[in-house]
Each structure stands twice: as C-alpha cells, then as structure tokens.
Length: 240
Image (cartoon, rainbow, N blue to C red; front, side):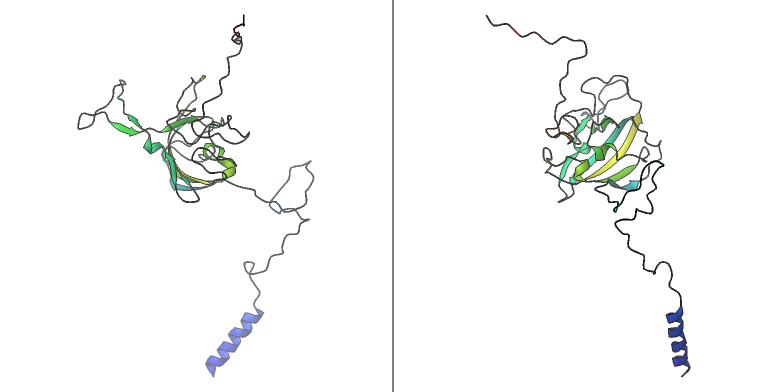
C-alpha cells in the first residue's frame, strides 16, 4: 500500500512540475521575423525571411600545433592529401611528390646505401592571393605551425560546377593538411615559384585561368602570359 501511495504522489508531482526550458516547445520562426542572432548595423533596414546558409567550409583539427599561429598573406609551406568526398578516391598528395634532400651547402644528402635521400616535398604558396581553390586557401585560419587539420570543402569552394582534371563536376572534397612553416612574402616572386602553377603539385590549382569565370582551373593549368608594363608588342612580319 505504501509503494502505491508513493507512486501516486510521484505521478502527481510529475503532472504538476513545471517544464524546463530544454523541454519547453520553442515557437517556430515565421517568415516575417528576422533571425534573433542576426544584428544589423545602424542604417541597414531589417529584412524579412529566414536566413539560410548556401554552403560552408567545415574543418576538424586533428593535431594542434605548437608553433606560431598562421598569419594571412604569408608564404605557407604545407603537406596535403586530397580525396573525393563521394567515394574516397585519393586524387593527389604532396607525399607522392618526392625530391632530393639538400644540406646547408645545397648538396644532396645521401642515405645509408649511398643514394640521394628522397623526401616528400611540401607545397609552398602565397596565402590569400587566390592562387589556390578558395576552400584550401582559407582552410588554415586559426592553425599553428606543426598543426594538422581535415578540411571538408564543398564543390562551390573547390573546382566548381565544371570540375577539373580528375575532379568530377560539383565534387565535394576532403583534404588533410599540415602547416609545416610560414614566412614573409618576397617583394617580387619569380615565375615558377613553388606553389604557383608548378606542375609537380597538381592540386590545389591556381585560380584566374579557368574556362568558366569564378571556377578554379584544372590542375596544371599554365598561367596566362602577359607582357610586362611598358613593353611594346612584337611586330608582325609584313607580307610582301
């Protein structure tokens, strides 16, 4: 009998106890009310309709670096591996591009067998200048030197609607990246500078020469040839 009374009292309290905010149903936003988290600056009239996100760059920090924090508009030296998000196909990796290791005097180092030592060559590129696909170029924000991160890049921030060499149209990508080093930019970078259209690193591609404006070009696309300012164009041979 005592158990039944206790159960009845518990049931009554459960019926009369106020609901917590976590379980209280929230009013659904109407199309005419602005998003509560969106604060407009003075002078901007309020808009009507639900604020939506078209696409976004997502990331996952795999290892927090201990070096300096990545600064914008620096020369980044990075290692990377890229996969298609649809099926996991690896389409490029800096670890597959190996080169000779040089000592401080610029001479090749030798391994135990007396052969030139070969190591993966990181990609160098000037960050923030549109040389690479947007999702890759902006994916290092908040990283520190020595850190590793996984990027989930939507196709709008990758190779676009047309795709590229080995990249299907509208392909979402996954990149694992490592920030190896950063340095100040040179005042004038020569042609063929690492990371600027070099064919050995096919991915990510430089932008600005795509067949579709606004879409990063396919990997290995050579830069457009533009005569320097003040140089007269070459004269065409006159026909007799």
